Image 1 (spheres, rainbow, N blue to C red):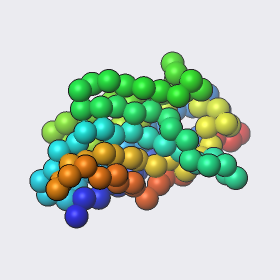
Image 2 (cartoon, helix red, strand yellow):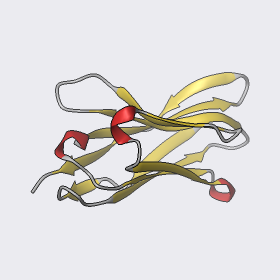
Image 3 (cartoon, helix red, strand yellow):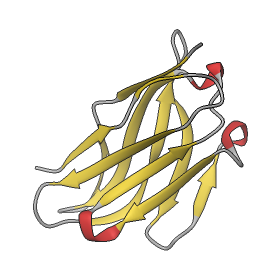
Image 4 (spheres, helix red, strand yellow):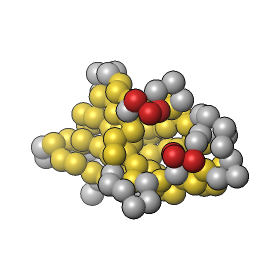
Length: 118
């Protein structure tokens, strides 16, 4: 059973940084695409960053130049480096994956809370 587990959320002051991680486990699989979404309080879930297995990366406009998605392929882990955080970045951040086991399927992590406040 494929699982995505996020970690690294917490409370940070405006202008600070956090590094989120998402580890994929569950036996044999291959990854087509992974990324990060977030859901601010009272709002819907929105895309933050997406990265394909071929190396193509996409960011939502509001985080360009501040957030970076990266990989540790040996550990099947994807990271989200968040810099110059703003109060508007406060949200539950979810790891997302298009993962191939017996066909392509969507998987979601449980979410990790990021709160940006002074």
